[in-house]
Image 1 (cartoon, rainbow over the protein chains, first blue to last red):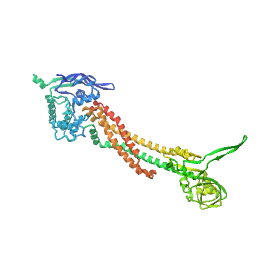
Image 2: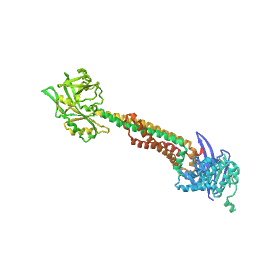
Image 3: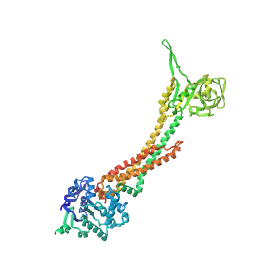
Image 4: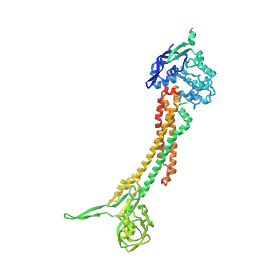
Length: 237
Length: 383
């Protein structure tokens, strides 16, 4: 199967005034369509940097990143923006909803630049909010939602363009364990619908849902472990 | 949801910031419109006052210099006049094409006549037009001049030892001294001023006029054209514009206009800087929000449009309100600036509204560009 994500010798170094810190050092791996990959590691291991590179938010200092056939390092700034909108769904630890917009409006934000009839935009947002269990709460502001509900809105926002890849940075980090489980259930559900999920997490419980685990240490892949086969592979076996 | 709605929602969320951003433009445009309107009206009022301040065209008979000599010996010369002005010429002057611009035509007759045994120059002018011809005269005694009355210049009164209420005898007739001029420093200090009909009778020159003083309304006045037209109406006359008067009027009005523009420019500049600083600090505060928008796929152009729209709306609204407030202030404050009949001047308001909007948008460009150029990584780091 053609990998949906391909990293080859990817390095990322930050530096100024002569000092240089390496966040990622020559990382290479492939991720296939439909995988649920959990990225773990200590603080400073390079997990968030890896996620921002995969999300097209920054370009590595060295190496090749190819997602869905697109070479990210060759895309112009607007091309990267289009890539993020169409290919990637981002979920952040702190939800990062716009506080002055309702749940529905927050979900519709990624569609702001598109000439889609407003009614159609609203219907899509309402459907997604219903699918994450927020039917009836579309008109609430983030301040009127619980942490779990806010994260559900953030997930709906990430899914509004039906992206093939979902990137999540500690999505349960600010939630209690029960609510965190519900959020992880949502990711499992969307993974079950064919999405490729990459999740940075400290939560070991996530390993039971994932198909693969990549552990980073000092900017390098310390361990890349297959946890279970993809449904298609299981069927073949 | 679209960029416009997003911008509008954000404005409503940050009402106090929007008000503060708009306040700079509002005050700038209100000041600009008020100053411009008042200056414009003052320009008209001062022009009117200046026009009232005497004549700016003199019409006199054309003369030729005649040199007299015998052989190589020069015997001096004299001026020969081929043409004499009369009272009837007033109507000819008043019939020129630009007659609507002529405010007054005052005939003056100068003649030397004995007054109570002293040879003095008499100036004759229509008594009823004295206030128009010489509005700056300060007269002790009666300010009106009717037939049978005279005014004495300060030196003439001293020479005749006469004051207000006295009498002066000339040509076997007695004239009552209606008043005495305060010293002017001009030739009239030594003159006797009487109604032109009395002076014509004394000089035995009925209908004669030495020269006409013409006051033309000169706001954007084609004074040269008026001079040419009077010259055509009176071919034998020499018509001269008193350039100094014309130029000084223009200079006074120009100074007013420059002052108005200078003050307005400074206020507008301050308004523009307020927009720049407010929007710039807004961008810094919104780095996180911009990071979210970049992460969900907003292009740089969309971020630019978002900030540009927000500032554009604030600028438009505050410019319109500022223009309205400026008109109101100008109207209410006009009497304090010597404008007796205040009117609403729309041109500064229209210019002000356009300038305010432009200023706001120009002021928003640097911060909007900065926000648009914000690297997603930099923005996302604040998440």
